[in-house]
Length: 295
Image (cartoon, rainbow, N blue to C red; front, top):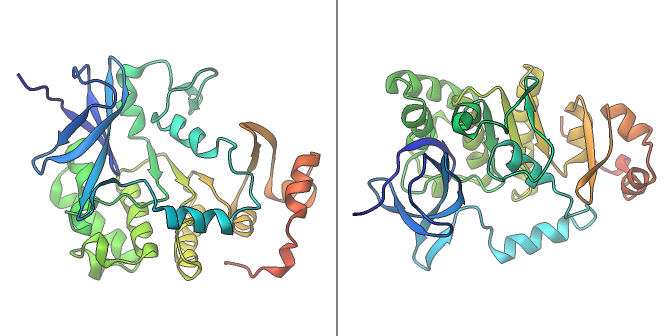
């Protein structure tokens, strides 16, 4: 008898199944009626997490894996930044994509790591926008947007469509609602990914290097949208190499080095009066006056 599971959560290309499905780690599975190929990437008694893949003429490739060319490009542009510090891992732990080995994670003052049984309810409070957009290529933009709210939250489809179109209009992409991801620019795809997260009505949104894979001219349109959300009081945790942008909108800066918090404070404190030698060395790499202001 074939093994099956019930989807209770969708976050981009990451699918969450309820309960013990009988799957094994790294097992290849089919997802949905379209039988998209997926791989089991996390497994416990209450939840099975599957990374969905896409098919291309060159074979099956993972959504979230950038091409070697793009990775080299990004590394060359950002070689001045400490690379392995645990920034993205921290976000993945907060969203339950990685299991923590110690400590605790609090949301509204309450631990979210103690009860895995109800974690799917907690995860709906936490939106995440990935660096690589992670839009399903076989669905148009509107279908990508409504998938989570309708399937995972059980909301009325017509109401979700109306809200999605309103948000698309706000970000200047209403005319693209029936286009496919391949027909959009990188900046447009990232704005769609942000709208997708907003449609889930999260209490906090996690942004993981959302501009790292964009060409410079596309960066501004994404940062302007994030800035608008910040001005509206949206709670966001942003991993970014865009220091001028962080300086402009952040209420609080957390500087990580080698997996630990090296320094934290307000944007003014961190950029104007860094306390630790490591932060001072990091900021001295650049003369900020040579850069234009995003906003």
